[in-house]
Length: 301
Image (tube, rainbow, N blue to C red; front, side, top):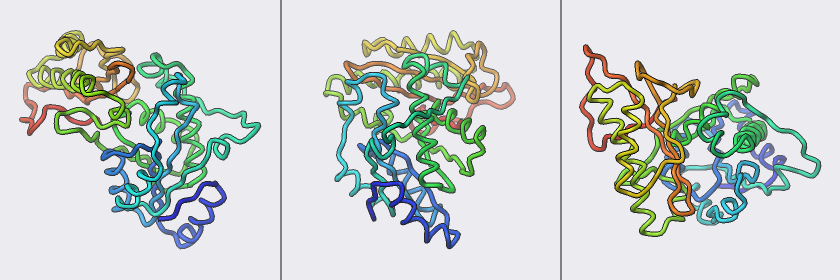
């Protein structure tokens, strides 16, 4: 695996593959790689001839300076894991390479950015996400870019910007990878102390409660959300937001009549976690299938 730190270097190392018509896959990350990231890299390895993993902690998407400063960083470890998972190239640019002196452009996606994370973190968050993802796609010019479904709203935003800007890239989103106890894998999990880690199980508990109630035939959004909140109560955790929305538009739902995305965010101590699950209304003639293992499924946006 080669490590490159400049756009010029990245394009130079990819030029032979592009000239030969080989498929190029990009896995954008902010580092602190875990099994969720590695599953994306391995999937890209199976589908593409060349796999690029970007490693860049994007300052423009953090609305809290303290969150940016404590975000875990370990390039050496990340490089080893990325290589083991099948990456050919690690693109690890500096902030100055991504945002050079005089940088004055931003990409903003309207509508789907204004709820959930957008409402909680401010418009700057998704402006930062959309801008850096657009830049990474233009830097690497991949055929396919891979993202995790844990950041379901981010996937919606990225698909929207790719469609609106006619970017020649396929966006593929893969299922959330979870710990054995159901907690969604996240780089921020490493910041939880043991007590906070146990309280963080409030998030998968809320999702499991919603899945179970929906499978039993409940379609009222209010009832589903109430059950999810009640499931969090034993962990002494309150949701920053908890919403049932349309998976494509993110408009709030009052009744679950088809697919619905249950999304939530919560603070555990100083650490902010997000999670989601795709719910499917139960038809009287088509009952929900029996779940295998944990009740949590992954959303497919």
